[in-house]
Image 1 (cartoon, rainbow, N blue to C red):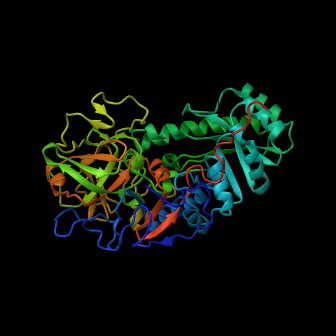
Image 2: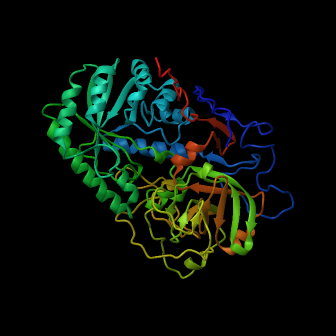
Image 3: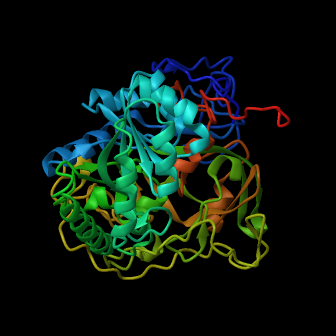
Length: 522
């Protein structure tokens, strides 16, 4: 997706612009109906994110502002009810304009994932920023500039970096020590208090470094199988972090605990000992969160809208202009047991055969493997060389969640353990039976029979039910729900709202020079 804002400079304007439908660079073409690419051909009606008057011509990330604002308000209220500070992670949306929606909801402090992202949002007027990524000592020059401009907080997880900060940090900054509570990515193991003690002794040597406390990302919740499993993993994290906090409070009375992951922040109501939460994905949500049971289909605020360019009806396949450079290669095991690179939103065409038996059936929640896991040997460049031809989804009985989850669209209360929507796939947020895996506004559904089955760079292979593939025509626009919205959004040059506004976002490594060449002989 091309975009003029990817020029290495931070776009300081937070105001979205109305799409110039006749000349917009990138994804919006000449004004006209979005329903069909070729007049006179009969194809699929567009989904709820594609409006008449906006003719999308290339893969485009479309955002629903109303759903985003609802998700923000819900999480802010949950933090208020839990008595914890709300410092949302902005790495998901990376947009100054969307950042203003948070500001309007009362947010004053934010989390980012890089020094360049901190610069982008500092230039957009944010004054309290945590960089929740281990300090990269090669960026000390920019870190010092930021620390002189905003209230900056840094993440450290080893003594070597702590020693470097002691000698190189030139402006005041808060210091969080990262703790590994089970995700096993970065951080100090909870029980290694000797390592933490040594880091704190080093920290004391620079009065510009203020110890804030212990920070952790509970990424292990993403591999949970059920909402109850998320709660169990969260309870274990709480136990570890409370123990650590209690151990250090006598010497460090102001020590705090900061946690952040959307699954736990969405469905858990126990936060004893926690001072701050930093969820990020919740603003958009995605197929992974929906499958985990964290949200309803109606709570997902983002689509990658892709044109159909071809179909191979004998293989029950269609091809979209939308590949790995638009969706990323993040995958999950879908409700039908197949590898999904995206979910398809299709018109609701009445009960599927699997739902015609009168049973209240739900799709089985299956954990989505990381894109780094071993690929099926039949998959080459993300596309299967044979096998399954979209024979429909297999449904399994799954137990209902332990509490009665109310629907967010009908004003269900989220704090206190109530999750948005009926958090189990296979039910819409109004409580009615869906004709797909997840009902959207009662008129569309996430298809359980048709899905993005493979990706190469620009191509997406859609495989599925014969009737659904047959209905697709070149020029149709498919709404794809990304497996992981953070990655799909990062790949976009800009966003389009459902009302036709073009919203700028941070360019790749925007605002800070990526390379600095030096004379190695000098």
